[in-house]
Length: 555
Image (cartoon, rainbow, N blue to C red; front, side):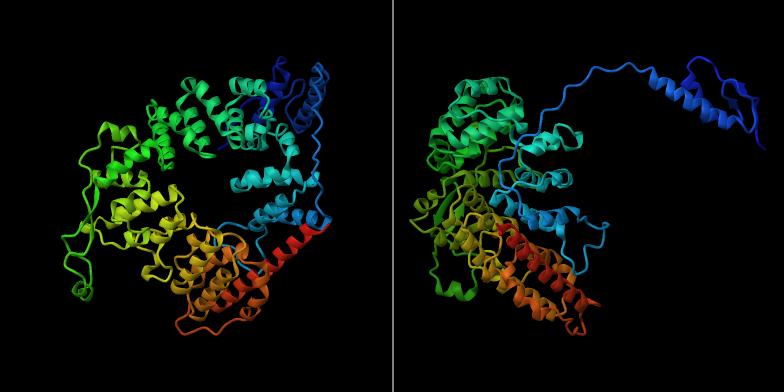
């Protein structure tokens, strides 16, 4: 049963609001002014609305003329070669498909090639076509990993556009100083004015830029206002001292150890421990030495029987006596007293002491042995994992390649970790302290022995494009996995890395892998087709990368 009500006339005042209400209620319940109910009411409502719209617009008072925006700045860099400009448009037009199931097919993933294209264009110093700037900023808005390369390539005009479009405001936050022009290093007055009056992002950018050119001047600038800064700002400013860190920074960092903020104190302690000659490093060395010593009185518990029979009963063993308390001096030097959930306090304190002690401490403390000899020593009472993990962190913090090699061990070792590499993440960090060639050689040896199941994180720290031996090791391992009928989707991550990192010159070697292989009885259904498709995409992508490089190299 439909409930009806008698129509009523719309009020004369508030004409526009009355028309909106009439439209919402319907003309069978409410009619526009001067019109009765019936089939003509809707037409009358629309006519009245049109008339009212013209009246409202005609009654608007003209606003004060806005100031015209300044012209876009000039970009002095040379323009892209025409072929490279067309390639950029294709890369930016590609969009990932619907989520779920991963990307399939033999076509390259163009959006994954965009970071590499941007890096190459930035290396050559090209300027983008002006028409491509909106698409570049849209791409960077959706992917934060693209922002540094996009903003470098897009140049000053991207910041000019970002000031005119709220959607691109991230560019002002991401650019050093929000795109502000930093003063020259010799312009003391302008530097002081910007440091005293500038926005936080501008001050961070100023300090970072000054630190890269005049480390002492940057430190003095920070020290002048240190006590007046907010805790969170002090932390960010202090982090800028990592660039060019040296012994001259020690007095300032020692003062920061007494800061009100625990995070500031911890950062100051970390920076001081990265200076092996600092007083904090010496204090940590004394504390750590008190916890570690050579014990000639016990035989390693975990040694095999044959080895035990050959070794002397009093083979040297590292003995560990972790601290029994965390005193105020340790806390002042950056040791966190409260252990994480599930972690023993003594082992937590011990790890922090060893991590902050100079690695040169241990050769002196442990009988003049080399890092490799020290790492090979057995450790009593199940302290080996904790001790070696702390040495790993120290090697990364102090950028000590010799200790990193000792802790990594040989890549062909069982479980391819060395004795101290307790996780893939730590192995990757240790590899980061080595040169690019040595890093690639170690990872190639790891893959040749252990395959690809644990290699993804290690491959991520290798220089691009991969060296010849590393690239061949990856391709050989993929081929072995294919021939064995392995579950193909398990290797999609490594295959994606190979598309971006394998040297394009390797494409010719892969032609033999494009055919669909015979599937073993225990192979995953459809695995052969997937492998052929994946190798086809890899070859196509490598050839596309070669074409991209050639286009960017054209005069």
